[in-house]
Length: 232
Image 1: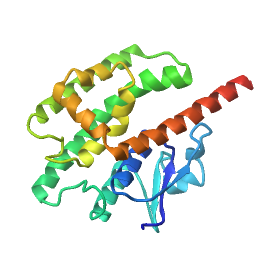
Image 2: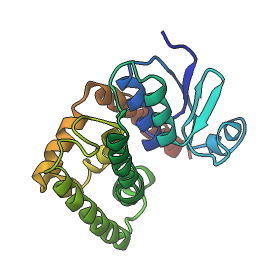
Image 3: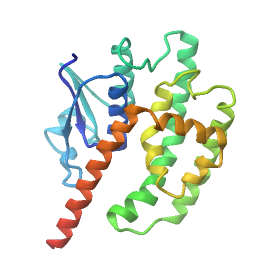
């Protein structure tokens, strides 16, 4: 058994969910060390010694300390390549193609998705704030362009990164999971190949474990916010 793997973050954080999904795919035991985002614990010591940018998650594997979720998943997939699901290609050309689609997720899909999640989910549901419709419209347009590219790509390959599930697919899961609980869901469902791809990757048992942890953490956060409101 691998020991000493820690994820320091919160189970409802998109980036933390990305790392946990990878660990579950690799069948690795890990400890989730909670960080209280609502009190700013991630912006002060001791957390900023692990990530000077004050963002979750941080990651430890023995004496190795990392941050940035995609770098963490890449390390896990390569370091534990012979365990669980193989999430990277060994052949240079296939590896290069997978890397392209992983970059597309980071630079095109996620930036639009993060803003849409913030505007359509976090602000109205958790913060009680008004939605910036202009920001929603702008980023829906950006997401449409990305999903159109995905629809075409998925006529060529079952998964974005190649003929099997890889990090290029896994990295999409947390943001997509949140978006599917908003009106943006129709942008995925109206594209048959994108819809089938998303149904495939969200049905993975490893991802189900992440969602269960996410839901528990969100429930606690909502209950805590309600208690705080009642005590004012």
